[in-house]
Image 1 (cartoon, rainbow, N blue to C red):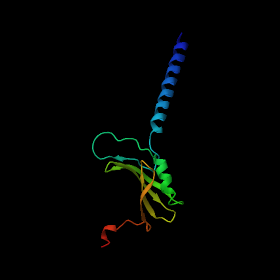
Image 2 (image 1 turned 90 degrees about the vertical axis):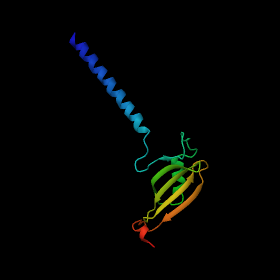
Image 3 (image 1 turned 90 degrees about the horizontal axis):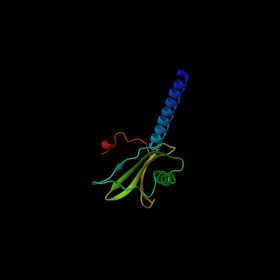
Image 4 (image 1 turned 45 degrees about the vertical axis):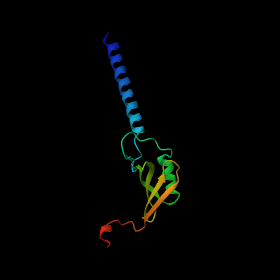
Length: 126
């Protein structure tokens, strides 16, 4: 009589553990890629709409400008009612680039380069 109850208890515990693992996997799938941050600094109130251009599409556009580079940051921003992706890329020689990609059209709208890779003392360069 005890044996069937023990088996039923073990089976119930296995189902609960499997369900919790599935829930954790689903929650982790929604998290952003490590190393890249995504934020939405929308102006005003209300909910932000989803961009037509994905983060990975914007990153690809930026990486076309720096073929040997890699993305260090990707942020969705809204300025003056327009959504843009701010993509930071580091090149193989240590240079840093910041690209602005229009989140509606996917076109590159700005490219700022810092080739020396040294931001220290930037305020003291008078």
